[in-house]
Image 1 (tube, rainbow, N blue to C red):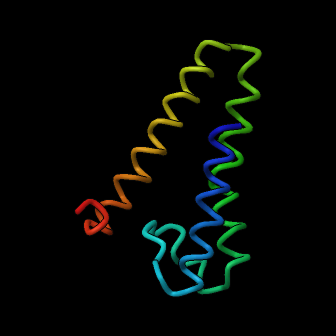
Image 2: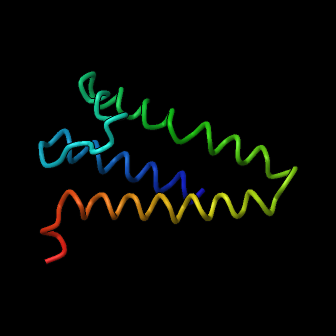
Image 3: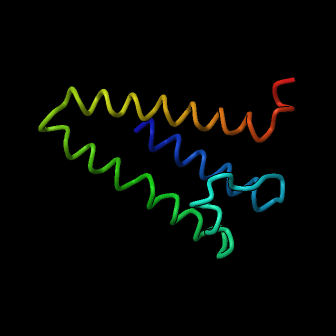
Length: 95
């Protein structure tokens, strides 16, 4: 649930910032979708995060320990990439 919540929050913030002209989508695999509107971006972003989460959750019955590790690893990785990417694109936020 935490990863899904973070992805949804990230999606909402991105839509607001990009549509207002304050930011750009840094992920080149998702940036193209804004050419077709915010709804296409939301659909593309959801397509990229929801299926893997569903697959991992489906694996929980077979290997709960691995799933817990994978979800924790994914959560930390997502946050590191998100904040690292934000700081790389906006170094003025640090100073």
